[in-house]
Length: 124
Image (cartoon, rainbow, N blue to C red):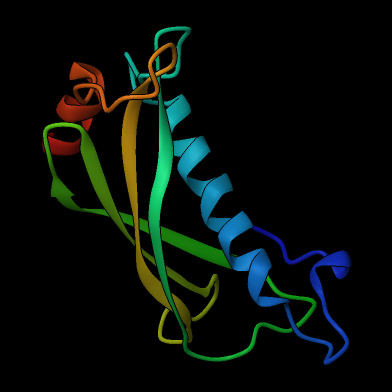
């Protein structure tokens, strides 16, 4: 994923809020490849928690590699661990942590069972 000029802040490095955008983009690309992804008119995932460890500043220009790993699979939730590294040097760690996604029923707003397609993709 490329770092965009508009991602920079006054200190000429990527603003901390953009890290969440990078992670969101990576999760969406992953979800689009999951059959029965659980993005429909009945249920959808929402972010319930996000934990980011900012290890070093990201400068422009830069290409990033974003790694997503299943850390925990629950009945209604999924904890996705993440790492943001340099695309050419994986030992350059910019950020790590995790995001908890909870699937909700769109009509009631209550937690809904994790879709089978998501569960299968995470276990496979």
